[in-house]
Every structure is written in structure tokens, then in C-alpha cells.
Length: 189
Image (cartoon, rainbow, N blue to C red):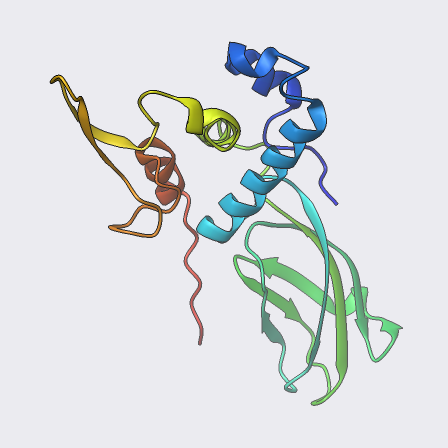
């Protein structure tokens, strides 16, 4: 499925000394949190930061253009029309669109392709490290990563960013700001 993750388990362990404890944080737990972060980032931005393979099928409307369900198409590995190899009729992939020689209306079109923004940009890797840490250990932190203000007093008050409110996707301001820069817009004709 994934060519390479946004960050490796070693990257995560090196990023935070607490996560280096292999007894408290086994590799399987770190990998699960990392995989959840990859899926979350894809849902938020409408793009993948790993190369993924996908199968897509649709019925032709009789034209020569189809809106791809994903962004950042790397390559088409298979293009079939009514069960027959039609790769020679594939003209190309432009951002968000698959162009091909006109297929008959109602023809069954099957496409296998790879998509994703790879390698992931450095700021997305940093955001992934922060978010994985948040998922694994933020509940035990004195001041959460979601803190947007802090007042020094006897009681120590702070305001938290809340995921899903006021434009916050993850609830971590730095992560949300990075992901906002990579949001892919989808336009329909």
C-alpha cells in the first residue's frame, strides 16, 4: 500500500526522548499512531504524503475526460475499457483529470494508479512528528500542545485549541497551520 511512511519509527523515537522507551512505547503502538496520522493528514488536506496504490472504476459518459478521485497522481499502472487493455488510448493525467481517447458511453473503465506527494515536505514531516507525539503522550503533559495562551498565576490557566472548532483540524496550532498550506482544492465542472 504505502511506499514509505511520512516518518519512520526511528524518526519518532529520536524526536522525543520519552518515545525512545521501547517498553512503554512498543514499535507496534508507534506505528499505529503514525498510520493514523497519515490517514488524518490525507483527510484534512485531500492529498497523501506517501505513495499509495489505488483501483478506481467508473462508467464512461462517452467523453474523453474524467475527474480523478485523488490528487498528486504519480502514474497510471493500468487502464482498461470493458475489460480490454486501453493504455494506448490514455493520453495523460493533468492535475485532477484523466485524459483518454473517447470511450463509448456506458463503457466500464478501470484504472489502477499511484498517487501521493513524495517525498513529504520537511514541514509535513515535522507536523507528523508533533501529531504522533500528541496522540501517544500529550495526555500526560503539564501544558498540552494545543495550548494557544497561558497565564502565569497560582492556578496557571491556558486556552486550548479544539479540533473541529475555529478552523482547527487537529487542535495543534502548528500542525494545523502546516496542513492548511497543503490543502488541495477539488473543483467540479
